Image (tube, rainbow, N blue to C red):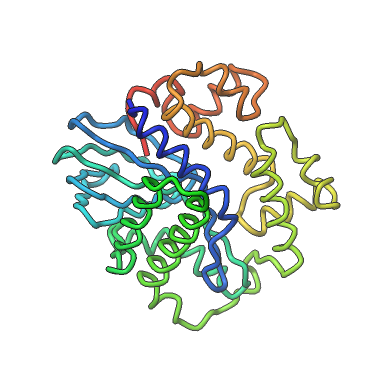
Length: 304
């Protein structure tokens, strides 16, 4: 269970993420759904689980043994575990105490020329053995984040948001420089979004981010961006491969995942309501299907 001090830090980091709509990566972008910190004080493993976003986890101290179904993956201090969405995995600390800074990211293209790169990211990460190298300049930024958290100054959230933007930008561009330098080839059969569709997608995504807990529906999103629900689904499917309703549900579930870990005094039923579910039983089924573990199981161990 997180200590009160750790809860305060994670509340601060959650607020920071709200100040970063997207990380512009030159032709494609990353959306940060969660950034939080885990401490592991023993070697108890998590349950096998999954989530719908890329996991970008920096091991700050100790040694973490990540496992996918085929092999173990050891990560030491200063190393990053980078795993594609929907990969079944678990982890435990093999050297304690251990601390992890964990991000959940979603990538999408803002230039049609980068659609192929986004599609290739899962294969690229597997080829790299789910490991990213962290440039020295990026490591220094994590230390700066610690100073901002501890300082508690008026503009600390905004300064930390800039630091996190740099961390994601520099690390992704550094590790995928070769793939990004290859000539972009557009496949006429590939689903791509034009400039107008991308503007609509980003506007819809921002609206969802601010209102998903208010029981909004895809129809509400469509009204907000002034197009039909059918066209809204089309825009989402072109940008991220999923319709608006599916994305909206995933966003609610990932927020519930986060709250279950760090708001341990709130009942599961209440968390379901807080993230926009009106039916507790439907929430439990959807959560278990998405993460392969029930909501109550999340509180047994940190899962990211």
